[in-house]
Image (cartoon, rainbow, N blue to C red):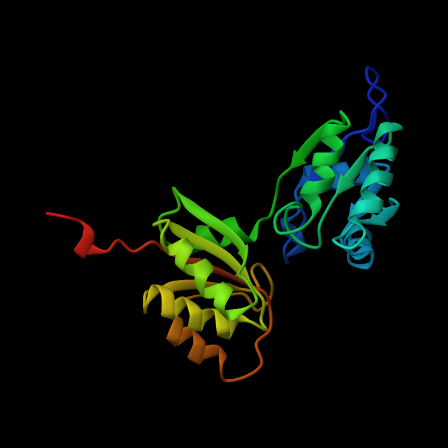
Length: 241
């Protein structure tokens, strides 16, 4: 029996939440490849990008778009397919669906409809950055992308600082300089880790103060997505006697 056929006992398809590479295509798992070959439909953020991934691995399965601006209508259509017995793989452009994208809404709708949901874990920029950061990661907070507006960005960083734990967040190349300035304002000149273009040809994982990193990337156009790791630095003045 392939994953695209209904379960004998329920007649329902399965929604597979499939992690895909964040850069290096060799990072895809054998299980992910098998599931992508077996499902009847792949729901993805960008059909062109996902077709390139599938074609690279010789996979020829129908794809449909599912993203922020069509999630309401497409979600209902996908759940209907699942209810009819067609198994679906949910993927995002890179990494794990539901992390800083609307994939969680489809998962919620499927669960509410009684559809089995199965995670197929794999690449994650958050885990990759933490694993190479050299900071304690027994506890941390992931906060997605920082707010766009300067005031809200600073307020959010202040709230994160108050949690007294390692913080991981994403940032775009267009806002990285402004975010480094805000981090310096809120956290001071502590050493943070900036991971850029993880698993790709021009990968950089750099440790430095927000100001030093700002100077590094202020020299020219910045390219590539960033994952920032802000380690918790205990304030010795508040440690007590």
